[in-house]
Image 1 (tube, rainbow, N blue to C red):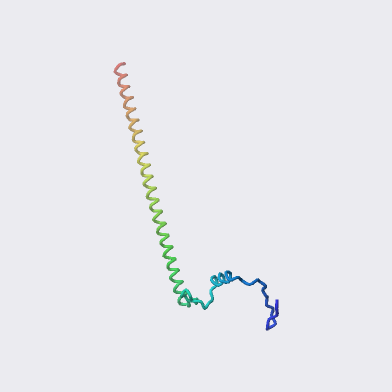
Image 2: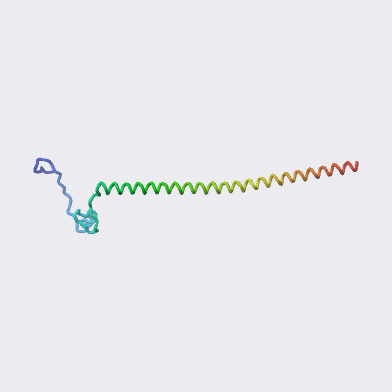
Length: 123
């Protein structure tokens, strides 16, 4: 620690000097504010630009949310339609089964009636 010009204490650092590779890596990770090699400006957007970008991003977010909700509703509709189709098929099969059982019972009843008539003729 050392005492600064205004009487404050400033910490001193006793790290070994950086090698050329470490120095290069450090510079590439932390470019200087004057470095404009990528062509971009390192300025914060103005309030108007920020509000416009925020408005666009919130509108885009709303649009994405609306699209997601719409696709979810469509998926639910398709699922329910398919489920109704499956249930209709199951219902149709059940009705056919009951119809066949009824037909079987009618035939059995008719056979019993014929047997009764036959017994009456004999007896």
